[in-house]
Structure formats: structure tokens, C-alpha cells
Amino acid sequence: MVRQGDAFEGNVQHLQQNPLYNCKTCKRDVQHAIHCYYLVVRVSDKSKGEAKFLLFNNIAEKLIRRPAFELLQEAAQENPHFLPQSLTDLIGRRLLFKITIGGNGQKEQNSAYVVDLVVDDIHLIQHFDPYPHIVIFNDYESEED
Image (cartoon, rainbow, N blue to C red; front, side, top):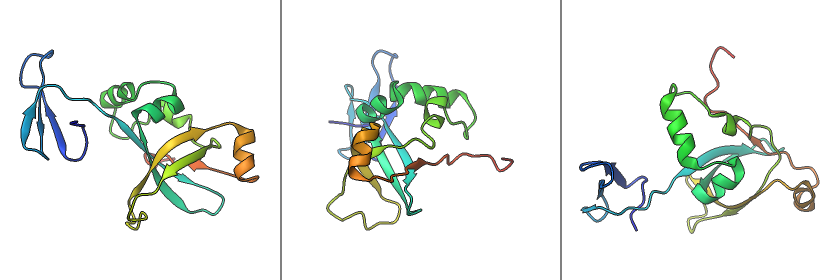
């Protein structure tokens, strides 16, 4: 499976209905690729620690209630520091994340945890931590604010 991401570069070299993609991993041109989108959010809790969480398209869509590709299109039309409304709506929300920790134990400082599930049900959140406070940061706050 070819995915759009770190080791993949998409180029439309034919008509719009017949795109050709170049996979940098296997060094081949591919006509039929599955586009995968992901969202990286920075979160913290009452401990003031921060972590990066990686939400793939299916998880991100459930959280923001719209397809990730729409965010990509919306952001492309605005300035580089634009944060779509569906993402700003996440700031300050209390959420519970089920994550996957990779084999390396996330030892790298900038590594992201893959999110398997996001829950906003207050009763379930309180079951795991009676005093949770998860904050999603806006990386693009202007310096004038």
C-alpha cells in the first residue's frame, strides 16, 4: 500500500482522473494510491507535560466531525498560520485518548503517539481520572495576541 506521508511524494503527471505517484520507498511510479491523512495535535494534562498525538484520518474525522482532506483544502486557501475552526474548537476540550506506544517506547523527544480512540464522554473520562484536564494547543497563535 502506498500512503501519502514522509516517504511518499504525489505528482499529477496525467489528466486529473489518472494521477501518477512516485513511491520513494520502492522507487516505483504507482497509479492507484490510497490517500491517508493525519492530524498531529499537542496535548497536556494537569501535570503540565506535553505530548504529540497522531490521529489518522478515521480517528480525526470522528473527533472533528468532517473529513481531514477538507481541512487540508481549507488550510491551503488561507495563510500558513491559519487554524480551521473545527480545530480551534478542540482547544480546551476534555478528552480521553487511547494511544499506542511504539517498540522504542517513544524515546525520541519529538515522536508522536498514535491515537487508537478518542472519547469525550465525561463519565468515561472521570472513570480513568477524576481530575483530568487535557488541553490542545494552538501552535499558530499570532505574536500579537
